[in-house]
Length: 211
Image 1 (tube, rainbow, N blue to C red):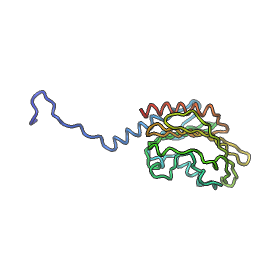
Image 2 (cartoon, rainbow, N blue to C red):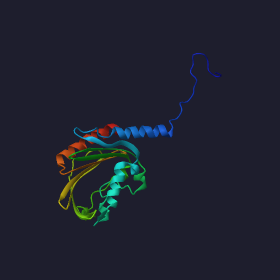
Image 3 (cartoon, rainbow, N blue to C red):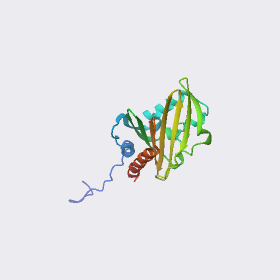
Image 4 (cartoon, rainbow, N blue to C red):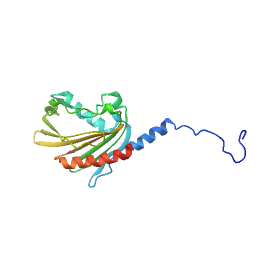
């Protein structure tokens, strides 16, 4: 080759990584932050990757909101990632869902700027009513005041009571750098200690993936 003597390597620059290669690397990093299958549960869906607004868990949440008539509509996504914001809906994400006879666990990890982290629960959302498929449901939420995980974190347990049924929804949201993890646990009873321990495990995975 012209310009190269025997035994010397040609000074040829390495090809730049393609956009698809970069996206695949980001998806792999987000998936690595997801919790493994918990003992006694089975996979409901995923792991899946893509824009946050297109994921199964996100679409299921949006459908549930559409089916409910809330006393305070602003409480539907309070203290959660606001999928109505394009920068959140279009952000790269990974998610998985697990289920058992006792309840379900849904987790999403999203690549977001720190400004996208949800604010605290508005006071009017501590307790409110909604009509869900013809049934009046009362939602009561308490802030768990969890020890801080990552750069920012919040945790809540919501009790939903309607008719002769009651369920609890535990949520943990943690940010480390440009990654936000959202964990949702649903069951007849969600215990504070168990929810926070699960959040701690999720944060350990998040820390490794964000490093």
